Image (cartoon, rainbow, N blue to C red; front, side):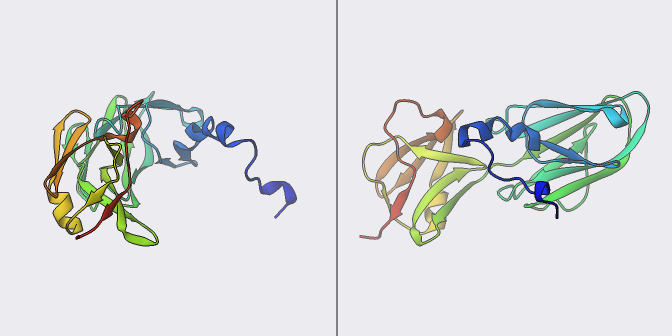
Length: 208
């Protein structure tokens, strides 16, 4: 490996965020990988292909792609399926695609594409929780890819098993959730929607 072949950690952390969009798409001569779901447009000049991505992910659970080509073009489209996406559907021109759609993998569409072909991913959001690596009793709650924050200024103490906690979570409106636990009613919202309110993210599970 040549000395200049390895580059790491250039610039500040703030500057690094400006380069995140560079990882949305990767391609070689015959394959295109979609790694991030961000409204964007890819101009694949070598192939004369333009792909537009639309949607309001993660607020909305679906993402759409539009294929623009001057003539029919064969390439393999690989769509990243995130680890949390247990139930995902993929449609091409409104037709549901068969095949195994597994979390933490790519779903492959191998076909000859024509102008104005449409691809749609529909993610099924479910509640799930993640514990701290060193403490199974300290957890954070998620809805699909979205980290939820409790609207509270108090210490967060929950009771019950993981399944019991999850079974008492519900969607009460757009970007609004509720948890009934231990005789208390908690209001939750996506963390990225929190502005000036007091909030908590990690809760401790105790049975006393």
